[in-house]
Amino acid sequence: MNNLLNNFCSLVRKGVDEYHMIEQGDRVAVGISGGMDSLLLLCALKHLQQYYPQHFELRAITIDLGFEGMDFSPIAELCRRLDVPYTRIQTDIREVVFDVRQEENPCSLCAKMRRGALNTAMKDSGCNKLALGHHYDDAVETFMMSLLFEGRINCFKPMTYMSRMNVWQIRPMIYATKEKIAAVAAALELPVVENPCPQDKGSKRHEIKTLLAELGREYPDMRTKIFGAMQRQPLEGWAPDPIDRSKKRK
Image 1 (tube, rainbow, N blue to C red):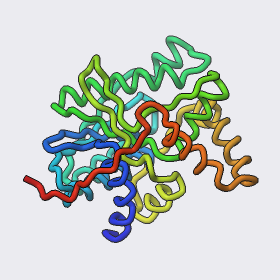
Image 2: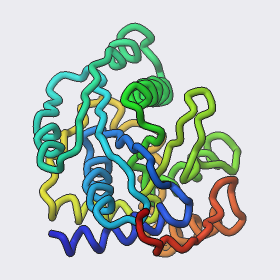
Image 3: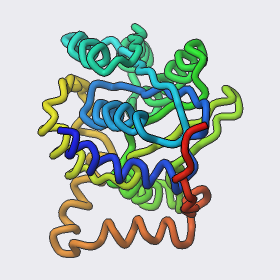
Image 4: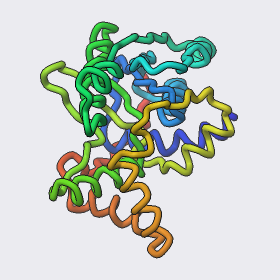
């Protein structure tokens, strides 16, 4: 399994290095939704922590949205085995979004509330960076959603400074594809918690996933070209800056 993580961590380290995501003394919180993306990110960062030249601390935080049937105890056990402090924050986000507000397009409000709760929890824990499980395919999908639904050339950044909270959001898996993540997560037998959200298969993002899958059968290198264009133009915050991180820890 170490060889498997070594291979995957090469992608994670590429993102961390090229976008200067982790510096000496950082306290990094990983947002754990229960999905394979965030669970693998936690394992990868824990593995990276053992040899990365800049020392950083690590902890895991789950924002429980309030859906019934989601058991996070296996995740707590995983964190115990990894020796990573774990915090689960119970919220009423599901009730607010679906029952109180009855949002027609609930994903945006849910994401905003979840991210706010995460930022607050990480600050309370003394962390200065929040690691999110967004990956290569997420970036391409977000770019296409912005283009087709908003008429904008836009995407989240590999690193985002949240000035109101004075924290950074980082996305270390930006070079990892969904296919690669799924294969490694399955091999590691990570305790994935299924998402019961009724919007999981009915969102705009799911529409874009379907569209890109259909186009990808005709144009196999389409995602690569879109991602490359985002870096070459580049979109704000997307120009990679390779640096030498071979220096030993101080």
